[in-house]
Length: 480
Image 1: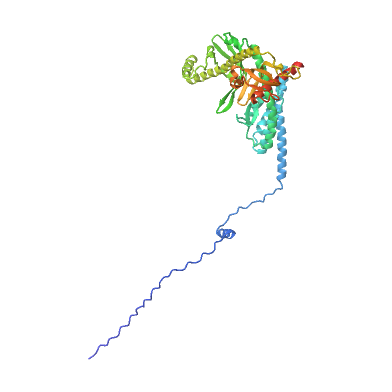
Image 2: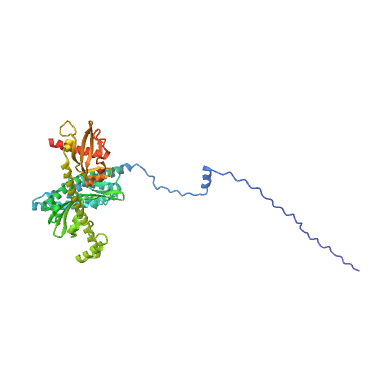
């Protein structure tokens, strides 16, 4: 019997499980030492690629001096040519010709050259180079203002030409004062030396302009005085005719600062029921001219009012009446109403000043009647070895006296000088109504005159010494 033999199965290899390794925390690596300064910058720059622009040609300074000399020579020639052109255009040869045909012949000869000069001036003002641009500006201003001006009109025209070209710009806060108007210099790239050159010429021209303006105003006042037929006192009393009115400048306070309204002299025609502006001189010249051209008239009896026509709520009613009368738009009627008010304020200023003058003259005459010595005797200027005379006199300052808080027009007062035990004492006896605010506190007080009146209160001492100085000059003039 066969027996089965069994083949033994191969043993399956079972992989022995290796024990899992236990993770242990790695010890931290030490940080490399921090790099600083140039070493750190070098490290950063390793990864950066720089693109460096390359010069096509290396600049050289060899030709710089030559170019500068050429430009300077061009600028010098430009200055000469501009000066010549300005003087040529300002020449008075044509005006000097009295013969009609000769004047026409001269004009025909000058037309071509003058056109050439004007074209040249226009061209050089269009130069863009900064040096040439500044050179043209300086030369034009200097040549324009350094001429001889015989009339105010000629000087004013030349000044206006500089404004038209933008060389001067009107600015009430400008640093350049010409005559009575402020300007600033135009933007022509001027340096400090250029400005200094210009300002030297401007200062001289400004003095000339003021002199010519003063001369012109005197001539205007003389002309208006010859046309005047009645005084302001007579006009206020109801007489008709042309009247020259003095309108003084007036100070007023605005935002804590003293400001001034310009004055002058104006000629008015006083008719039955109205006042018509004709012309004026001084700061109000242009204003009166504008009112005259606009046909502005003032109802005569309104000069007795305390406020201008159309003040407050009545403005609308007056404007409506003017609109109907002139058949104009509401805006035009309002503008005309404002012009009527302007005319009233100008006339009212002249009327108030004249009324104040009358009051001062009356008060002055009353005080003078109470005096028993003259100011010359009071100050010892009558040849009595400088000895001051005791007594009462009228002391008057001619002109405007300026003090700490403002100014006083022609102050006067009645003063007394006494002597007690060989010492002179000064006192104010009486002051006019308009000076009570300034001097009334001193009335009745006695002050030792000390040495040169210096024991008096400061402002009073200055006033008395000012009056004495004027009296000294009057005595010197009288003795010549």
